Image 1 (tube, protein in one colour):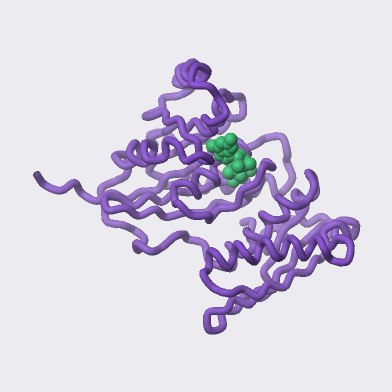
Image 2 (cartoon, rainbow, N blue to C red):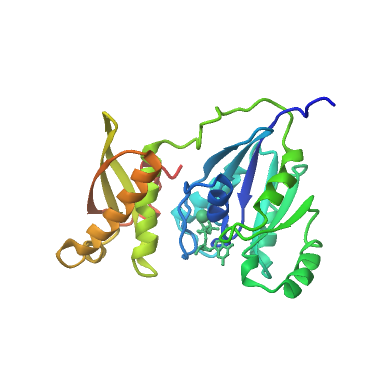
Length: 295
Ligand SMILES: Nc1nc2c(ncn2[C@@H]2O[C@H](COP(=O)(O)OP(=O)(O)OP(=O)(O)O)[C@@H](O)[C@H]2O)c(=O)[nH]1
Ligand SMILES: [Mg+2]
């Protein structure tokens, strides 16, 4: 029997905030690449993760959560990033939470280009009983013309092989686009900023993370040691004081957690220096957003 031809293609993971797109990307890669938190709108820019197997290369695109409630310039940039990620993909996977399919999921489906194979990935099945899940899957099947509906739990790593096997036949027959040891299209500078931003989402209160950003001011790789200077950008002096914390304790906790993640991903020692700067109104200033990489 002739060997199957190699396949390679891009798969966009789209969905409402907090459904677990980034957790799913990491679970499929078997490595932490994309940042995650229990707060919605953690991901702000799209990010590609490359999974290479013997038979196929999956270029998985994580995207910001789609929402229509918040309308500032940063939110517009996030929705633009979703539209950008939907250009020239081979498969679109709409990720939803088990037992939740609503107006925002339907609004997002309208943005999917015609003719692109559409998957429904039902995540967080660890939170439901099988008896409740089946009626949901049946009902969801009527929402659009899905090629496949795949229930998974990104957190407990259930259904991931099934998802990969279901996706593979939809990838075009072609040689790998990335080399086998490529993990992502993003550089270490971007990933360092993201890991620091994750700690802001995880270690600060409910509201503050949304008005913070991160800028990498210096990134040097000296004989395998990364020296990184990063600025946390906030909108107000009061926010700066909260992030620094009493005697600098909060900032130290944030920086240490971020550094440990960076060392793991980069496989090297990292010297990380972090300071906090105030730039009032940055989340609504298009020029400032562009400078910070929100294109
Ligand atoms: N119980 C359960 N929780 C999950 C699962 N997958 C993700 N989560 C949790 O859901 C929350 C959101 O996960 P993310 O991966 O950050 O979600 P996201 O869709 O990327 O969110 P945005 O970037 O904000 O759009 C986190 O607290 C995850 O731990 C799952 O399979 N089961
Ligand atoms: Mg995310």
